[in-house]
Length: 446
Image 1 (cartoon, rainbow, N blue to C red):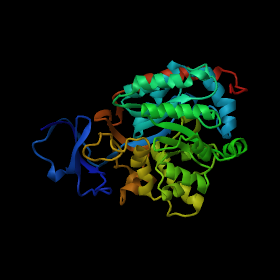
Image 2 (image 1 turned 180 degrees about the vertical axis):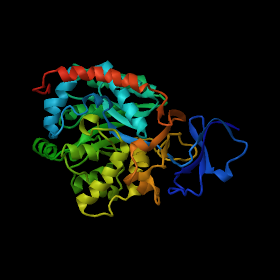
Image 3 (image 1 turned 180 degrees about the horizontal axis):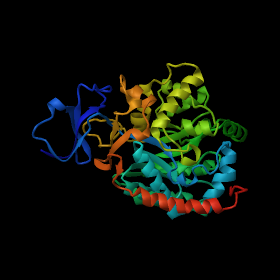
Image 4 (image 1 turned 90 degrees about the vertical axis):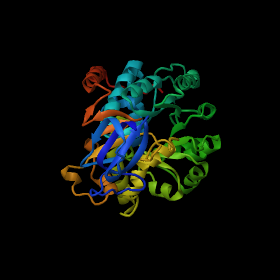
């Protein structure tokens, strides 16, 4: 039988074998974008042939990581305004910079830069939310990375949508254009309850529901946001969204740092998922999301990097280890959020909140072949007693040697196959010259 790719001699991390032994190397067979078979090398059928064979000796073969929240094009603003509180960072620096520099061209090339970084560090699926989202989708598709890409909606003039009255129609056009693509799943992103009116949020969710799409929104990221909501609406941001009727299994609430027990109960009953971005929340001093309580309540949780302007990198391995360690020290309990629990957040948990649980997140026969190969022949990965512990506490994105997405090789032996990184770096550096030469922003356009 002919197949597309056979990965041989690797440690194959499957649900049935989460801690594979070096004494039992295995194989993965890929055919027609999907995982066709897995097993031990001693059991590899002799009749199987493939166009491509990858020797994974000394490597771990595992599902690709899923980044559940990013603003890919914001790579241009990496390091532009650091060491600032969220609202100062947004209103005095990021919003003005976006008004001045965000364009179709900028979004395309800066998203490609994000794709380079993500593929090289083990991310195979990303949930993006930004403006000119069709250009985001185009760049990510060309790079070969899977994406749930959400068009941004906001109640003031925004890049690509100068009249806020057109924001929902623009999102509808974008969804219609990209629905049915094999790599890109379109979605709707209403920025937040403090930048979108209740009417806009409801219209955005109505569009998502009628289109069968997911709906993303920043929620309860800072203490001041909660205080503003209590003053304006008399309830917390989560309770406000619940009153608007927009919380359900196709809603992803991003951040959710400042939640009370009532908020957690509402999220649990609604079925909404949470995308947590620990490093971004730390850098902006927003706080620590109660991930342990969310997990205990059974709320689906995924991990995200957020954009480069508030992280400042897109290495999901860094996000994994930060989430695990931060919550232990915050609660003074080393048993919280075990390595296995956090690893699931970056794989099956992310797949669930993005509505892709039946397709990706595990090395399971019949699921799409989104696979990374991690080189374990490194000093910091030696020895390995528990694979989950190694991945969460020792590994980094630079250990990813080979990436396969949708059954297609996109990186082999650290060499990108779908993008010319030199071209991308040159394009973004040219844009950065304009950003450097611009006067410092003083006022937010909002």
